[in-house]
Every structure is written in structure tokens, then in C-alpha cells.
Length: 436
Ligand code: GDP
Ligand code: GDP
Image: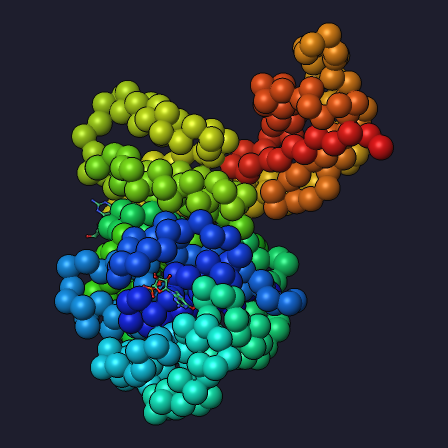
């Protein structure tokens, strides 16, 4: 089941990022007494009791060129577009302000559940402050205090009540879910259209209707696929669609829901800093990954151009050395069909399970050929290995002393596994444990 998404929306300085950090459970993003402080993180997974969800701090989606009211309007729209449940945050110490009313006006347009929270109610004597907020028309306001961590339990209970029913979007086992992520304008939607051979992805969006993710399902040579919707693919012409933080948010959401992620690069422009950030998210998430260099038709080439671009990719994305690279053109459809096979292969590798006996033969053989080096007079001894998970394949290696496992030796073992089992496109994880 896909995790529901909760967005926090509200005018600046009501405490959105404070609440975000409280709920996420880490206090890493900076909160200062300045309105509009930039945040490091605007999207994270979180949990409450048995519920897992993703949380968005819309205040972190900085829409710097727009006037104040326009900014909060856009942030509220993003919340409506992206969330299953919206937390509308206000400040009890200041009462209802014009800006709160502006936010409310936009939120009236959605049918999505909205929970109204009144922040900065730091002690029980202050609870009277919440009554004014009934006027906003979202039912009972929940008094909370971000700085003291009060009231969050009741608020999250209410939020969780509004989650879509379990199983509403079940993950079908036999479907390969993939997404195309990348900067705006690299050609993601053109590629999807080229895949499908017609403009099926582009749907006209009627103002005011729900705008849930528009995924595309199709079948190719007996295999079912689902293309997870990403930024820039819907082409609704929203002001914020080309904004960097927004496209990052969409990429994160899409990665979450995918087995395989296609990182689309613009062959004409080469690799940019933003590409590296986006690729980093895919890597951290442990998904299958490949690089797709698009607009290859527009690149002036000789016989070395492809090799040179591949080298650039390898140097820019050091930790994604297992990800294959394809050079395609959405415009001419050159090699677009080869992507299907690759996605299938990567998905199979990502879900691959190795028999213990076979795994241990490979590990023993690797150790025999290249014994672990000694460290401070001690030698690492590997007793046996076992696969504990798929997606991505994860192995536990039982040893005498885990501290003796050096990074380079771990890398060597990983490479031996790759050579033996061909894990193209998927990360693999090794965990070292002392044999008990
Ligand atoms: P945002 O702009 O809505 O994300 O607001 P911030 O999270 O950056 O908070 C704005 C200011 O309000 C900061 O100075 C916070 O320390 C302060 N603040 C946040 N929550 C509370 C609270 O529950 N009580 C009080 N007294 N101050 C708070
Ligand atoms: P997205 O924002 O990543 O979804 O990018 P689009 O699919 O909207 O494409 C952005 C622009 O690049 C459009 O003007 C496309 O026509 C153009 N484009 C996309 N793919 C190709 C391609 O393979 N070759 C060329 N020359 N242009 C392309």
C-alpha cells in the first residue's frame, strides 16, 4: 500500500517547519526567529502509531519571485495537489489574520480532508485562544505547541483518521512500477509519450477537480508496467511546476512509489548540479536505477561522443556505477524501445533472491582468492552469508569481528557478487554481523 501524504500549509512564521521537525522526529532543519528561513528538508517519511506517511512542509517551497500573498496561495495549491490530508497551521498568539483567511479561501476549493491546528498554545491556560479559529470554517481547531511538543498526538490521530482506506492503492505484485525523474525540460513527458506511441499521458485538467497522481499503466510483451507520474508530466501549466524545490518534491514522491527510476539527463546540455541531487535521492532510496540521456538527436556527435558522455556520467555519479546508460531521443524515438527491456531487467535484478548455498559458494571462492587483509594482527574471518531482503538485495555476512571489515574489502565482496549474479541497475547492500 502506498503511504499517504500529509502537507503542512499556513502563512510564514506560524511554526510549519517546527512542527515538521517535531513530527519527523529529528531536529535538523534550522528554525530561526526570522520569517522565511530556508529549510534543508521539505519532505520526509514519518510515522504515528502504526501509520506511516510522508510529510511535506510547503513553507519550504520557496517561491521567491512572487509577492507574499501569491506565495502562500501557491503553497496552498501545492498542498492540495500533493497531499491526501492537509494540516492548516495558524498561530494562536496572533489570532486569525488576513493571510490565514487567504489560505482558507484556497483550501475551501478542495474536497481533501483538512485539519486545522492552532500553534503556539504553549500551556493549558492559553487554550481559550483557539475559539476565534472556528470562524475559518474547518471545524474543531486543534491546539498545539511545536516548541513544547504539546497536542501533536491528538492532531495526528485526527490526521490519521482521514487517511485513505488501506488497500485503496494496493501494490500489485506482477506490475513493474517505474518513474522518469529529472530537471524540468529534460524531456520526461516527451519520453513517456514516445514510449506509449501516442499522447495518452497528457490529460486535460479541469479546474477544481481532484488532482491525484496520474499514473499510466500499460502492457508490453506480456509484462505489466506502471509509469509513476512525475513533475512536468502533467503539463497543467501551473506556475510552480518549473520551480526547483517543487520538482525535487515530485521526484521524491515518484521515487518512493517506484521499483525502477530512470534518471533523465539532457544530452544537449550535459550534466548539471541539480541532476546530481536528484540522482542522490534515487540512490538513497535503494531503487533500481538507470540513466537515460535524452535529446541525443540534437547532439553533434562523432564516434567518441557517447563514450565521453558515459565517462562524464561515471565521474559525476560515482556511487551509481551499477546503473546502465542509454542514449535516446524522444523526438525521433531512437532506441526508446530498448528502455523497456532494461527496465524489466533492472526490476528483476532488484527483486532477485539468491539461494544460500550458491551465495556461500561465491563468497567462499572470493575469500579463497583474496583473503581479507589483517588489521592490527587480526584477520577478518567470514563464516557465512545469507540474503535477508530484496528490493534491493540485502545480504548479511557473519564474521568474527565486524570492525575488521574494511570498506575496500566490502567493496570487493560486492563486486564479486555483481560479477557472479549480474546485478545491473540495482544497488546491493552488505551488512556485517558478529556470529553469535
Ligand atoms: P514557519 O515559517 O511557519 O515554518 O515557522 P517556523 O517553524 O520557522 O517558526 C517560526 C517561529 O515561531 C520560530 O521562532 C519558532 O521558534 C516559533 N515557534 C514555533 N512553534 C512554536 C510554539 O509552539 N510556541 C512558541 N512560543 N513559538 C513557536
Ligand atoms: P519535461 O519537463 O522533462 O517533461 O520535458 P518535456 O517532455 O516537456 O520536453 C521539454 C522540451 O524538450 C520540449 O520542447 C520538447 O519538445 C523537447 N524535447 C523532448 N525530447 C526531445 C528530444 O529527444 N529531442 C529534442 N530535440 N527535443 C526534445
